[in-house]
Image (cartoon, rainbow, N blue to C red; front, side, top):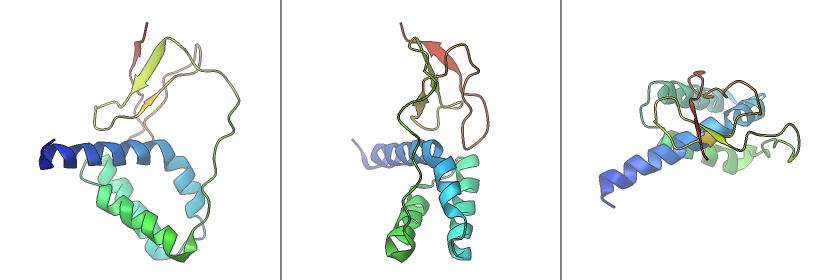
Length: 123
């Protein structure tokens, strides 16, 4: 893999991670210092405009590790089911995040842009 391809894949993975965990990251951000809030805002802005976020996200993670770390909340491993024969993907293909929509429900939304994630059959 070339350096450019490796960098692009790093950005895709960073964006997929950020999109997937954005609600948890936002929830854990309350009460954090202004520097943390500013960094999170910068990452959200960069993600929406599809500019690189991997280095910024790394800074946010290091900020947590430097002393103000708090476990991010996690969803419970049970709840409403998911459609087995459909998969939703990033609306503009900027990241590799996928999600199975709820049965007979609306397509999930991208947590960065708010756009509906297009679905396609898996079977």
